[in-house]
Amino acid sequence: MASIQAARGPGTRGGIVGINVTPFVDIALVLLIIMMVSSTYIVSQALKVELPKTATSDGKVTKTYVVTIDKGGELRFNDAPATLKGLEASLREARASEDVSLVISADQAALHGRVVEIIDTAKLAGITKFAINVERSK
Image 1 (cartoon, rainbow, N blue to C red):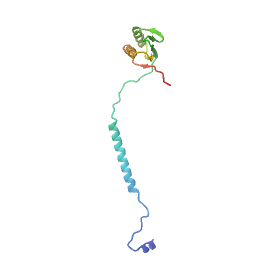
Image 2: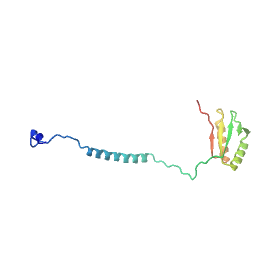
Image 3: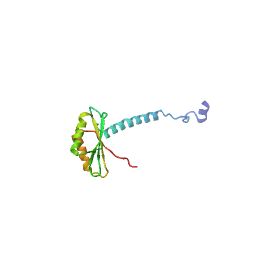
Image 4: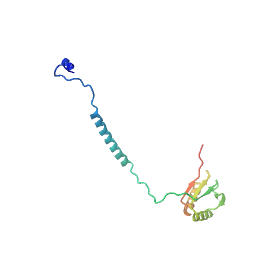
């Protein structure tokens, strides 16, 4: 090493052989931490939602009943002809003995009002679990 200094002179310094990356890594880590902390704060402020709370959840349904509405608005309850009053009585009777679910199968040409009328009748009978049967298009 003395020979290199002698060639350059007594007061000159040698060239930089390596780069010290420790300060660069320190700065990068501090910036990363700042970004992570601020991003979680921003996301938590933007997505402020209050989820509903329940004491119970949906349990298994004991029995499923089917109401079918054809093109003309005629009703069938479990494949037997029915009237609106008879349907309500049957649903109340079924609801009293067990937890039931109602599936409504309505023809495509059936009136929307008729379907809503059946849903309303089911709610009056105390049935809270019902679905509308559909067919997946191909």
